[in-house]
Length: 97
Length: 97
Image (cartoon, rainbow over all chains, first blue to last red):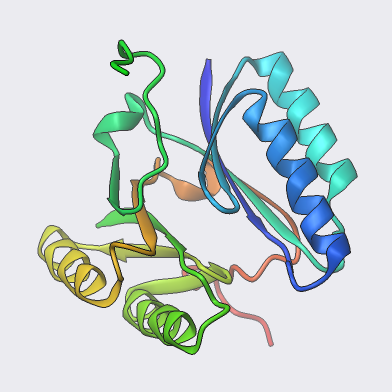
């Protein structure tokens, strides 16, 4: 699996922008999780990456938005630091509720 | 040098949030560039990373904001895809104006 970070820059001052963000979030969350309002960590296979990229490019408005997809270093938890309000949940660890 | 991605999630609906974003931007841009409204690519030494992290943690409001720092894979240009409005400028290449 490939660990990716998807960063989406969209104007959320318009309803159309907010709608695009919701759609991008839906596509990304199917393969991972939302770690910030418009930043997503996803894990995909090579084939899923093709589909994911295609869907994202269908949703965004290239004249207004920016989307950046980074391949993360593995293991991801060794290469990320999070401060403040951390929304990440490690689903590969046992969840204690 | 260490290539980092700094993702900052801050509410920009308040003047205080916008001010924190401006301050985070200033600190990050000293070591790199702003690639999205609240996403920065920076290159730092081990020592600069300590200073950068310290400054960022001084600026953010941990009860409201989220900041995530990813170590990027190198060479960075092989592991990032950008679509739409791309603000990145490769300063290591000759600039043709």
